[in-house]
Image (tube, rainbow, N blue to C red; front, top):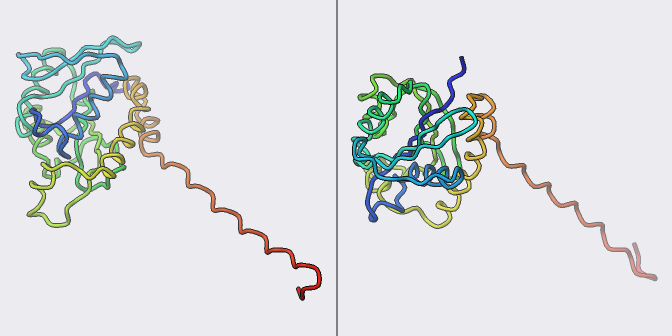
Length: 213
């Protein structure tokens, strides 16, 4: 049976001071998905999160933003998933990704947490890495010692616009994700915009009468 996504998770840190920082790209994505689906995120104390339930053609789907700070995200995810009997392979986690450029987004199943504290905690609480991730590129500062400072700062306007475009494109695959059409969803998310055709060279100007060609 195809794994349909029943729980969409966006990772970030709560609070106005973090709202526009790179580390909150997962929250930006989930907020855009909620808007697309007409869902209203409300506080759910039992999950320590903002959550919404959406009824779709393929059944109920949950949206979740842990309000525990990034490194404790796993509590919210595991608690809701266990209560509603959602399997790890039916979970998609949207998060910021240092190893992709702003404007890139990649869909991935399983694999290591690659140092991401939110993914590490979800792994610890679920007991498995076998869940889907939507990696939203934020770029890398170039020096490992600068990473913490970098992710907790706002991106430049150009980078924010590129991230928003990647979010917009990846959201085009949301129905495919809910239907379990993961190969089609991957192709939609990874599709590159067509390159503009180079302009044709202008014809040489015609010689004036009486001039040598």
